[in-house]
Image 1 (spheres, one colour):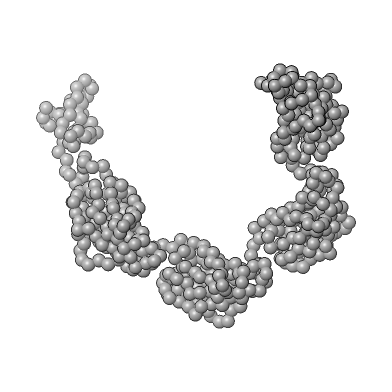
Image 2 (tube, rainbow, N blue to C red; image 1 turned 45 degrees about the vertical axis):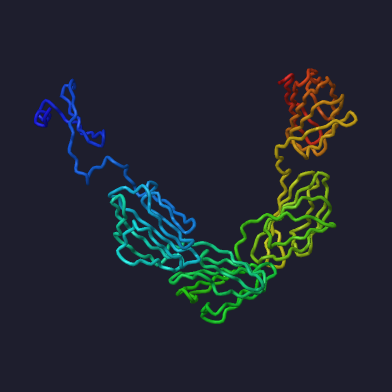
Length: 476
């Protein structure tokens, strides 16, 4: 059917293109929908292509192996390569005629890597890679499906430096810095040291040097001649003091822009768990501002070292299972009055102090009744027809019967706590008796005698007795 008839009023075109044998068709249908036909439609190649799938700026990262870079153009039209060795870009496979490709070449830290090209790359002239570290060259090519013809080449002085923090260390009183690894140099002074000339500096880049005194304090800093300081500079000697210096580089030297001193670095609440040895507890405040101690003996808190003026410290004291341990304080602790540790097992006391750098002045003291009980399973065993239970170890008690036995009175019960007893009958039917602290419903309980059957009992404690609240028997 000809175009003239198809375009008459009794037909309407459906402008949905289809592909068959790389040719395009337009579907026409009668207005009543009873008849349809398709007509081949002549397409101009530069507007439509039904051959290879379109490439939508897909980036592929190239690597160099044995000084050669293989490129599969089917994986993307933007080829990104970090030069880690002298290399040759091989002839790409699967080129699509009419496609524009981009090659991005970046010098790695060692710098000065060279690049050669396979003969399919038709360069406009003699091209040489910028040898400077992190320099970027972008070459654009058009392909006829076989060769790659250079459209343009441009050089970016340096790739973007995204503020990276480098933590250089001091070895034998010298600090080495590789500027390729970052532009913020954060150094904790653990000895008097000299900052060496940094390697891989970038012209036009601003670098930041952060110097913090370690606990021993009073370490000194000297600078290599490439650091051009505005005048004499001395590091703050106080523990944890921070100095921040900013420099501009011309690629060789570092010119000081500014220097600022922060009285102290921020303490990001760190928890320290000091222990008591020979009835004395040592605390290094440099390690944290929250001191969490489990009392396992009568002890005295020694004068903390490395206190920071203006800092608030928190002391958390918890009674261990044996309970009733006492606490004494060094004279640097300025208590508001007479303070006595709660003697009951697992009780927690929290004291807050403000420091002037030498003493610790009490701000507050609080005493929660008990530390939270973390749900924990305790496996009970029978010894000489008795089962011992330490409630400090957990609130879920599991026992597999192996002999006729009796549950003893649990130690370290918490008032208000709930406990679960899980009983599993072993291969031989065994009996179970209860200590009088177990207040059973109906004053009696008989364990299920069937092998592998489970009984479950729930209790609430007043700190001395265990009151049954529910039970389930012959389970499983």
